Image 1 (cartoon, one colour):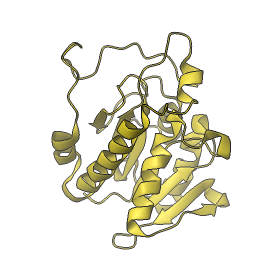
Image 2 (image 1 turned 90 degrees about the vertical axis):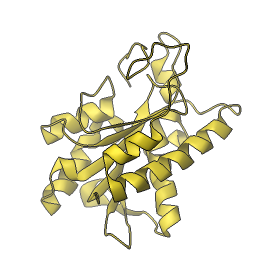
Image 3 (image 1 turned 90 degrees about the horizontal axis):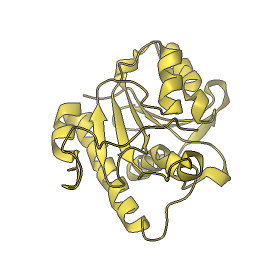
Image 4 (image 1 turned 180 degrees about the vertical axis):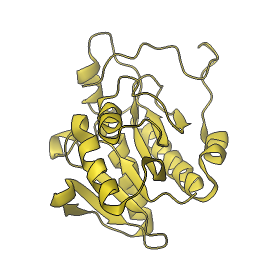
Length: 206
């Protein structure tokens, strides 16, 4: 399927660049670079926007801060009269190990305030998304974890993860979520319970 919009979630500002909470922005930056397009500020929609030349797909980075992400996306969808299911949302998940990708067609926020905002503003949880594992925090340190940067030891795996996520997004665009999920869902380590998601508590995101 060809998505009308691909959204990357994150926080604006230099102090948040390259933080765990901004992996959605990182994937979109790589997608834009691969297509030779540049993001432009669109104040009326409170976002940074780039347009893929071959398909017209919009790449959107909300500039409202994470917990108001839905406000910006609602404006874009309303203007174009596009339904929520016509977009793909890319964001971080602290309940998944770094290097793990998970596609979903719909679902709850799972404690993620960016997705919570989108569900509230759009009035539905039915929209495709790609979750990127950022590793788990120590108990009581969720804010410091997601707003912190990756360690030097994690950077090689991060770069590989972002490259794989880029490939996964391109496959989802051409062949659909199911095909991308089948190829790019990563295997949970054998030391964890073999269920659909690692059994890790989901404290609320900042």
